[in-house]
Image 1 (cartoon, one colour):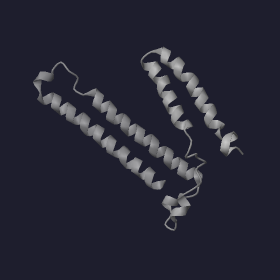
Image 2: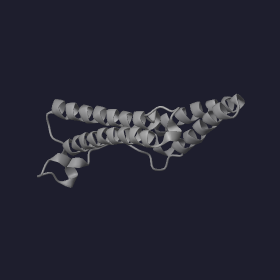
Image 3: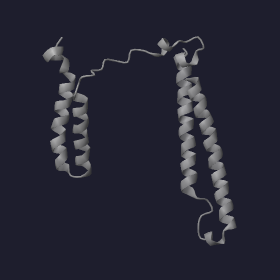
Image 4: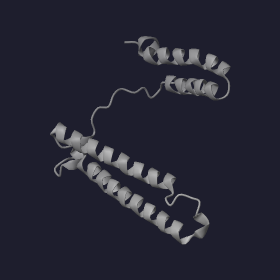
Length: 147
């Protein structure tokens, strides 16, 4: 996690320098071009976008640093004596044969298509979403895989 935090600190510093350079360059370009007399000396969209990228990088770096310090322990990626099995925890139970996730994905696609194209499609997709969620949750309670 320390490497991630350091990368975001470096990225934040890069964006701060880029925002300063972009703003200075914009002001110098405005002064050297007489056709820009009616415009603002700073091109605000780029300057604000790069500055906000720096702010986002600062937020992420700060959060990762605070989280690392609060956790107290090092991640396997930060330890020299770590082995591959240290970074391979149990992440849950997944059903490789299940069709319900794909059904749910298609149903959600119908719902969002209804929001974009016509609300009547949403009324078709929403019951399929409910059926897919219920089917996915209860697939181990019936058939060959009942427990």
